[in-house]
Image (cartoon, rainbow, N blue to C red; front, top):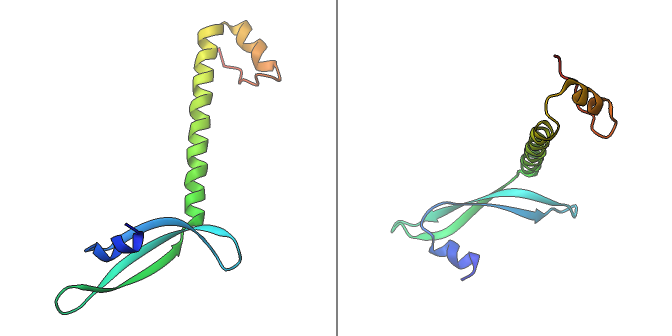
Amino acid sequence: MTFVGLLWRADSRLRLEQRALRKDGQYRWFLIRYNPFRNEKNEVIRWYATGTDIDDRVRAEERTRNENLALREQIDRDSMFEDIVGSSRNCVEFFARSPKWRLPIPQF
């Protein structure tokens, strides 16, 4: 069944987040809300829809997810580093000065 068919069979409000092509040719995320209009018999005779541009919010959420993933990976790497190298002051200071590792020097 198509979305339109499902919409006509639905009995309440619907929400949908989707990408849509704007007049300027740019795809952006929109929140679409469908609200039924009923007759005196409480039958749905028409649907009204509103669209809200939520592209900035969706992109911010995606950035946050990516940053959280990178942070988790960094924490895992740091934990593994301590497990492998240990907490030897000399080793930690050596790797902290290495441009490849760029680890902060802990205060002993």
